[in-house]
Length: 639
Figure (spheres, rainbow, N blue to C red):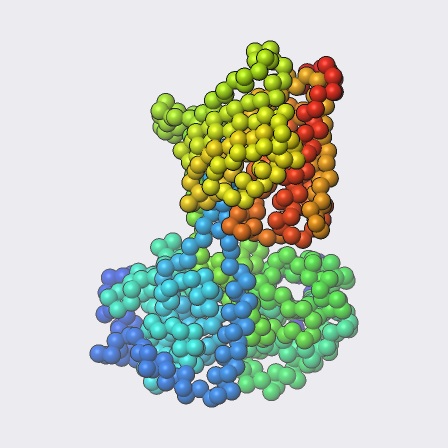
């Protein structure tokens, strides 16, 4: 056979299924029939389309039938399926996303949580051939996602009245026990809307023929679907290093699927075209499904000639094929130029069938150019994300003006009122200041002493700070590690520090740690007054065994916080290490100082945190020393 030879600039690949109004109307009638006739309609359609009478045994396959199908597999095939399943599961486990929570500066919590779908229906074809690999590829990602109810539908074979034994064996291997002998559009309708025999599902996945694809289109919106898949397709980008035998074999591997399958080779070496055609004809002659493959290549086969790799990849990205093989000298480098493809196979040792059956990534992929916006099936397809918001009164107060302005701009007065009504009754967190018993009270001059108290719905903090102390600390609150760190802060800064605090540490330490840092910053700001005469700047490097940390402070009146380096462990004992950074951030912001902290090196998380607290205390001591009547500032007074 001869394939069209087209220059890349003139090639246009538009894969759309032929409009089939008759099939569309028929599928709509089938779906409506199942919704109205329920199990009776399913029996009628199964007899009509599959030639199988469903009697008293009903639609459901028994677990003993599933076990028998597995037991009857040849050992080498059972072992191959098991190994493939293990590889597929291992790959998909890596896709699982993580929940996250963002804590705002005023205590608001913004988060996203992932939840698995409750019940999923998998359709496994059984028309031209049986595909146990499809069972693995659809069921395993759902299981990894945490779906607890997985249902499998597959059409009954005319001679046995039950689905193909390979499909049943794969179901047994994956642990799926709810299996129904249902095929075609009627199976999709039953899964989407439910009948007395087949409870409805939340999502329908899995490939099928035109009628299955159209049925998924009909039910979409009433139930989730993975995609409306079309016939399979492959693009191969080949340069002078490619073997024509490989190219022809891989094109035929797609063409044998379906008369509408597509196979295109983009050649960087025009002289390969004759060799590829010769190999296609040689291999077609020995192919059992040569009529199907010939029909597919006649309609959807082509040899495209490109002058450069960039031009070849432009053809790929414009066409967005389901499968792409890169048979070029440096396939890994070429991958960086691929943006639109369902799955990519790199080099001569990775033919597309390794992805169909065994490698691990999913073989349920976007077709007909939908790789421009869609991806292959994966764990995320069986999860839904849910956001959550928690606000403090302080955060609502701070953000209310903007929220109300936006609501009123959209003409939604009730939205604005929903916020206003809360402001009218809000009880805001408060900070009270106890004046220091020193002679500078009321003068604005630094008193070097302050006491603050803070009450919120989560915490209660009472804190006193004397910057001209002896390094004494009286710390009473239920976070032992922070008590230890603040003791070191006081000792190395030669400050007297008293903290009495309590909070919701049964939930976590975050609120209490953050609020103590906030109060320490507020006390520092109050204790320094107009800052007249202080040194303003402080810097200290502090070692702790193998660790070295640096703290640099500018009591500028302009809050800034910079953090460099990571504490490797998630926890020090029971204390979350992320709270070290949160504490210093609250301290810097509320104290209106520029605080730069860096972990220069080290490998012990406890030592890193300890070095930071020591360095900060020592640097702050340098910064608050009185050096004269002025302060280093172009403005004379820092406020």
